[in-house]
Image (cartoon, rainbow over all chains, first blue to last red; front, top):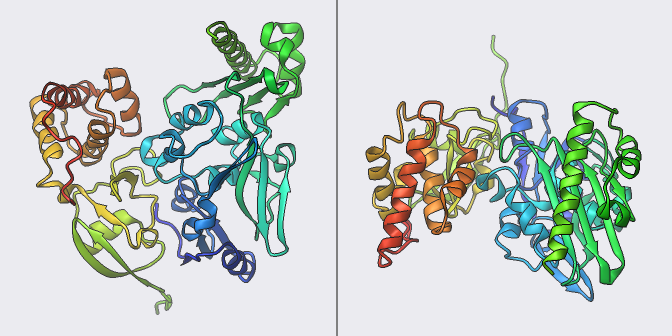
Length: 275
Length: 175
């Protein structure tokens, strides 16, 4: 239950962090909060030769508004989002999601970018960012590039990020004040990874009504136009999406995802009434 | 014959219980192991060593942190407070008295971590109801008490603070 030996570096710029990992023959790994990597290293499921700590890079904590877009730096912690220390522009969605991630002691250290780069399908941010259609901003040895939400995650724990690239932040359209959202997570114990996640983002003024079926085997299943499903999530409309999400008809997983989705839709409908 | 293992250490500076410390650690050494094995501060208990049970929870820069999955090198420059550092802390002393009064511990193994989380609840969420207290406690496992006494103890301190607005909520020993 102790990590294997490794070396540690804490650079202050993204470029030097990229250079350190690039020079390591594939044995170095970036770390930020380490709340997933730490347990994996203690269990020796991960044995990197060097850890390059990104928490010393101030640029990765920058957050700002760009017109109707919000940019959030990768090293912002879950607790900072929960406490509304940053202007996330999601009308309360991100603080709500943050509060449900693991436990406060984990949220104090774990980061948005770390969770997205780890890409556990049952984690919260990966599903939330897809629901917000976020753009993933990446820096590497050949400069910067940006990936779409659909292009970010290709499978469980697998992203488009190269080993020597850093996720520097995410950028997405701010939600209108009239937007309504819901985030329904099913788990047996508070703070554990979800068995099912359903997200709705209904921003009528912006012409957006997006839904996500999450905590499945692969990347989140996105429903780009979920207007009809929001009003009436019956079997005829929902079943094809549950099938497309890779869930086996009639299984326990199929059922909990169905219920999570129906409840998420009901919450948005209820919130709209109170408008 | 023994293999020669080249152990590379790094020297870090940090504050531990209000005292400035300079110490050489291996990068793989967890904050909990640094305290327990190099500083002889054994009040921090290790349970699962994978960030689940909460027994090793302590304060880093005033925030509850899992010391079993946090490396000591990553805490360079930080202010670390383990249970030994709260002797003169008003809120912690109220919590200790309440834990005793409400029988909030039996074997005591989870207690240092429980007290850290309890202190965080009392100072950060002064309006917490029982449901919120239970939710916030969900990251600390206790296999003896069934949590009822722990929730009551925290409730007792929260109620005492509510009835006496004069009691400052965010007093820290490190102040």
